[in-house]
Image: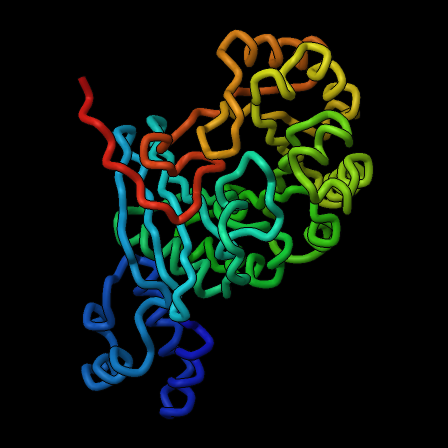
Length: 335
């Protein structure tokens, strides 16, 4: 819901200040309408229903993967498409992948979102309404800003949303903000807002290849981005998580693993997440299991911790790099 509109409407109506808190508490517990808010006067509930939309987003469609992942496509009030994902894990985690923009202006070549027409930054309420949609499904406990958009280009709204996510059951220590290396945002995150985790979308160990894959590297070169991440680590005293998409014949050779280990020193500053490629229209092929394991072993031999990310929701185009507001075919029945 539009929290600013809610507070303004309640104030104009002469309601006590705690009314906004009551509404928000009901929403964070999974209420699906004002009618469910039994400690609000009935007349107020009816007026809120007509004056303050319960959500800033309308659900266009949803899809569910064979692995339990759910994806929702929303439309903003001005018709902008937004996708978000709920990932369920066997260890009991219920993690949200949230979007910070409708589309993305940065056109990374491997990412389906980059092929969309960029819409605009999302408001803090539009970000929170993605989370509240899934909170109405079940409790949630983790969040990653790895959906549509570059979070650091919408810093104020992302941080405002992060400050409220603990009300939904998502601790700040379980919230990760991912960036392609937008240095002004990394620098602000070192001193502003809650102490969330930082993830860097890297994908290449040198400037030439990284610029081919991610044009933003021409603006913020690799060495400068890594220096900004080290400064963030020094300020926040947290490890930086490096996202590295494994592309067959592009960035997955043993020599490139050794080069990556070289640029990531000191070793205690970074942990690498190797990401199996999820098909898009970018013309790439994913590295095979042997190449991924070999890459991981090269990093480990040089003291760089690395894990392979578990892919979720690929069959409904909900996996990393696949969000593009396109219809997803229903997953085939399990054999």
